[in-house]
Length: 165
Image 1 (cartoon, rainbow, N blue to C red):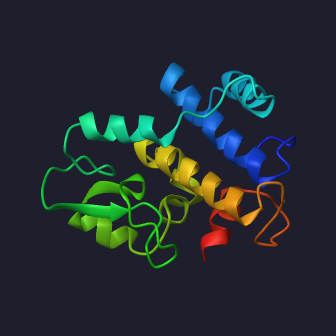
Image 2 (cartoon, rainbow, N blue to C red):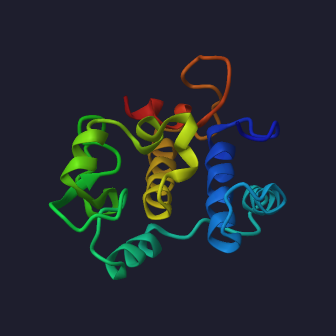
Image 3 (cartoon, rainbow, N blue to C red):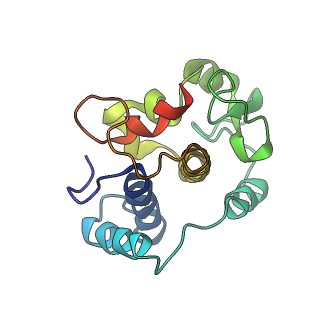
């Protein structure tokens, strides 16, 4: 659940990105003091999310294993945002996944696949790419400053992917 100050899709993406930063710096995506500090800096424009090029470089230079489970067997390309939902067939939207993970993930985005119980387990490279892609999609659709897009009465990570369903 995001902080009560998170009111828009833009805020939510910044909140999730702040957790990603916290995980990279402190090793803990739940270091709330660090998360809140990073979130405020992102929201105030004092820091900016890195370009997707940074994520692609991390991916390019990383070990060639499944981004989800670490297996090196039966690797194939996985679309982080499934093509069935969005026609983003480019390197920015791809990651290596083993056949088992790719089939299990199927047509779901990372938050849908991992679910509420495991969302902190979404691998850093996957989450980083997803947040940057989803920001761009919301920006193009003019929905960054909207709130609860799925109409369930709360703003949460599942509102991010509503735009691509």
